Image (tube, rainbow, N blue to C red; front, side, top):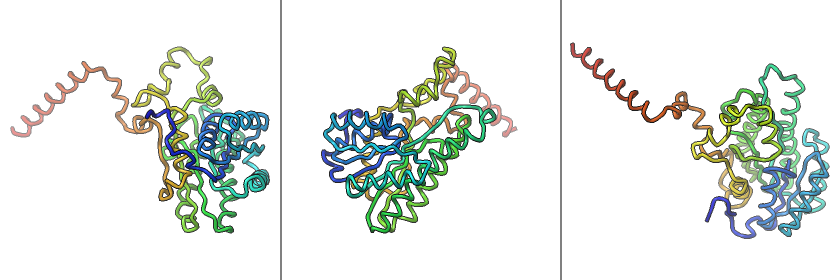
Length: 304
């Protein structure tokens, strides 16, 4: 068994219907593909219906599953309600919602306009609570169990310079995840999150790391795998495996959890002295010798 292979049993999601926002491309598309392979019906949404329609046809042909593409701007509650209505009409009910729609860019914060903040906050935070309220209220009224899975980031709890709107929005969505896990658990509604590290996708990757605008030195310095203890980026199937597990009945006792899948990236960047990983081996010999000499000197002074 390899980490690039599917993890769950066949038909592990049989009979379930899952909504994936931002499901037409990138990680949303990869999760959708695996949900379909496991027997789920999937509703994919984004603002670009042409891409959704193409993805739905492609994945239906690949998996034999049922995919409903619905144009929906999650920033607008009335569009979310319309998407929900179409999902119910097509499949009868919805069992899980994956809040994956997102926006991000890197920039010094002082260069941003308030409209740039608005765009990211609206997509990530407003979009997440719009979908959560729309489906959660129905589940409570219908006494139906359900599961929310929010795609977060590892800097949601630490903050991050140069992606400040995203950090603010993701922190809010993470608070929503944990708050509703406590409040709505009594209804059988689970809320969890995944915080992925680097999982390269063509669109997001080129926007966040536009190599044509960077020197070769900077390109090498900011290669994501260089900041990850495991020395590699993630494979989409790894994230799809985790997502499928968290929306399946196998994880029915997991609630209010955020699972980081980043090869240890955030831990490496969190400690004050982590950058010492770049100290060459021979330098450590000199450092250790200095420490020993200092200890000897202190001991002699204490005994005098």
